[in-house]
View 1: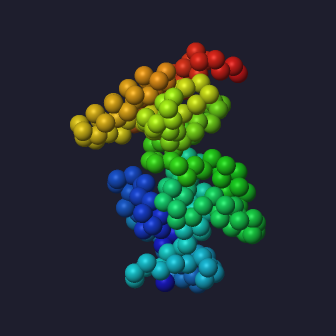
View 2: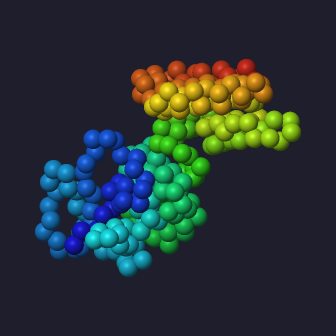
Length: 231
């Protein structure tokens, strides 16, 4: 009997944040199973309680909370939070439910890792790259930005929503994931509207993140310093 786990279960729940070429299937199998790891299939022996298992059509998979818990304790530091962000953003689970699960499963391997990573989870995060960008800045020692910050004018009318923002300094950084011309034009107008109200808005791409992450940190550090932040 296979029970889908971690990234594979998250994908079934709609948190499709795997890389495009990741077709691996991660499963739990019961004790005594003779299923062995092979290319594309990664079994792990575990005894699960009924509360840990859901059914989706013909598939059995770990519950959303157990899925997020497993991703946080068994995945790479950054990607662990990427999966947890996606699952909580979809309201499949919550940071409170994950914290409760961890508190009641202290005998499980990696439980303290979950508790250490959980404060970094942000349910408002709307994309994997937004999560990665936020964690890059946090790991560099910058203050935590607020996700999906709503910019309003003096009449309290909504003007724009910014990916990551430090409202105290009116500084924001955005991930440019626009794929189409119309989408890009919408983003340009949104950012221009925020700038007209005194916001400093920087925009970065996936290439910036993967090739020159230190430059992003320097750029944001300078923007915050120019607006009055002191270390």
